[in-house]
Length: 183
Image (cartoon, rainbow, N blue to C red):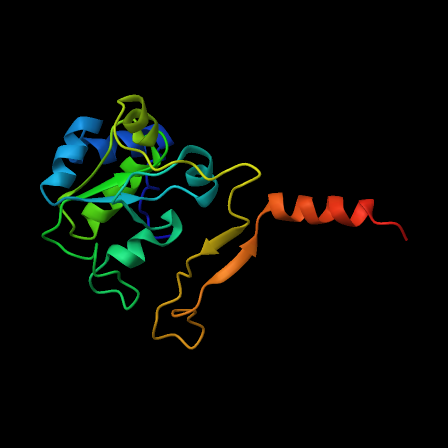
C-alpha cells in the first residue's frame, strides 16, 4: 500500500455534471445556426436509433465507441473531418446524455470547442428542424455497418472495407422463410 486514500467514488450523475459544467451546450436552433456557420454536427447514435428515428442532414456519423480515436488528431485512426482543434464539434445522441459525456472527453483531448446538443436528436426533431427520414421497419436496411476502432496502421485494420452484420430483422425474415419451407 502506498498510503494514498482511494479516489472518491463518483456516480454517473456526478460525471454528467462535471462534463456539462465545462460545455457551452447548444439548444436545437443554436446547433442549426452553428452548423450553418461551419460547426460540425457529430451523430454518435447507433444504427438502430438512426433507422428508427432518422438523422440530421449534414451530420457526420461516428459510432460512440470510436469517437475519441476519430477525433484525436494524434491518433492514427483519426477522421480529418473532426480531428481539428479549431473546429466547433456539436455531439448529438438520442436524448443529450451520452453526448455530454462524449463532448467532455473530447475537451480532455484538447478539442476545447466540443459541446453537445441539449436534448439530443429528440429535441432537434421536436423543434421541427430538418430530419432525414427513418429507414426502419420492413423496408429498412438489413445491414449494419460497423466501424472498426483498430488504427489504420494495424495489421488488423479493416479500413477500406466495411464489416457488414445482418440485422435481427433480416435474420428474423430468413428464419420465417426457412420455417415455412416444406421438408
